Amino acid sequence: MKTLCLLGFIGLALGGCANLPDDLRGNLAESFPALGQSCGSRLSQDQELQLDMARGMLREGRLHAALAHLQTLPAQSLDVRESKAVALRRIGSPQARAEYQALLGTCKAGEAHHGLGQIALREGRIAEAERELRVAAHLQPTDRLVRNDLGVVLLRKGDREGARFEFLTALELDGDDKLPASNLLSLLLLEGKTAQATALAEKARLSDEQVRQARQRADALRGGAPAPRVAQVAAPLPAVPAADGASVAQVRVQAQPLPQPLVEQQIR
Image 1 (cartoon, rainbow, N blue to C red):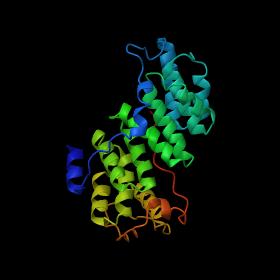
Image 2 (cartoon, one colour):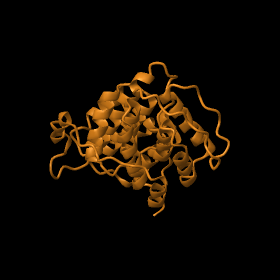
Image 3 (cartoon, rainbow, N blue to C red):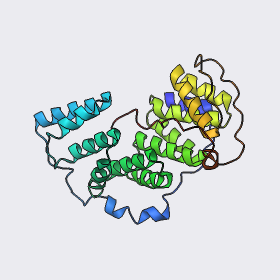
Image 4 (tube, rainbow, N blue to C red):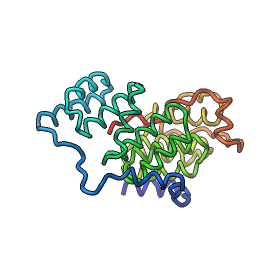
């Protein structure tokens, strides 16, 4: 109900959901595991506890410690392999790509495509990131993190309506998640929709820092100078000049480096 009220109050117009591109359809069959395939060998109770501890370290940002603990667990466990891929990706190791690729033919294919998309996004390969994340969203349509990250990619390439759809989908899947709310705020500020941006910041209870970062991302996408710090979330947001009609891809050539997309704040 909270999310429905939020979205109704904002009143954003949505287009239809984009279909999966034709060049991805041929890759889907190999992404699905065989019927009845196990998701890896079962771990003992002690091993499950150690895996949970390693995942907690990932959430805390203790990436190298998490990886060390994961290396003591059975290498054939797909849950362990997925967590290891996450740790390597966040550390920035080139081994992460191979770890994710090895999961493509398993029941972790959705997570694998998600991780490969995040790697491509970080390295600036936007077209590849979109392809991977669209497959991930097809395999895991209710994963709010996948939908958020796909929205980030679409916003980076200039597809504002596509990005809006993905951010709103992520919000409806979890109305308490600040991640898509912050990214949607950047989009509204980029479009100069000040009233809707103010309403979203208030309804989503975004902090001053989250609003400031959202404004920075909007300014970077627009190609303008960094905006001043937002004093209060509830205060009216200053008017934002409308974009000049050039595509985001064209504007980025002269823009400041884009702040880190909000794709790393939550761990699976």
